[in-house]
Image 1 (tube, rainbow, N blue to C red):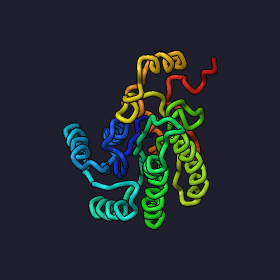
Image 2 (cartoon, rainbow, N blue to C red; image 1 turned 135 degrees about the vertical axis):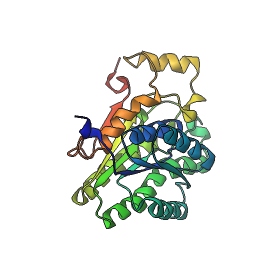
Image 3 (tube, rainbow, N blue to C red; image 1 turned 90 degrees about the vertical axis):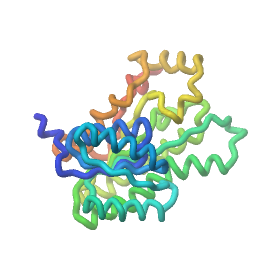
Length: 256
């Protein structure tokens, strides 16, 4: 049974793998045998994740890139290819947020959030998936969405819109890449107190979230590893594509 989740011989590119959630998912992939390229704007943080993976006996390397810049991603892809020869798994986990009220929202802020959360995913898929197809590598693309993508949340207008767009991108690309043996899915995390949402977690908002979460708690980053490894494994999820997998403590199933 453990062979279902064996990623030995696979290389995973973790875009945003230096963040709280992205790093945990990357570590989970490494623990199951995958070689990991940690990609982020902050190279120092990426290198910290690499050290943690290496300390656990894994293989990883840090690369610097800005997901809103095609040239930056192309350069990172070239460096990763020189390091590993190619990749089989693409984890898209960059993200940024803002609590700016709708009528105060400036388009510069809108553009910044969209550039990272939506355009950045499109760019990474164009660059990294194209190389997978050229190398005839079957594989898995895993996008990180949000509960706000299906039920918009208050105070995060642009973020919610960007993640709804990401769901559509995921399903479109699942259909686009299926003939090439590349599966594309998204994970919808519930509330995991990461860097981009801690600033809007007031006591009142936490109470509201708990009242809407049947498990009555936040998630921990490690709880995203199982879904990530499952979707990355060609053996375990070979017929799974175009899906939106909830890891949210039941948040999405609640009404009143």
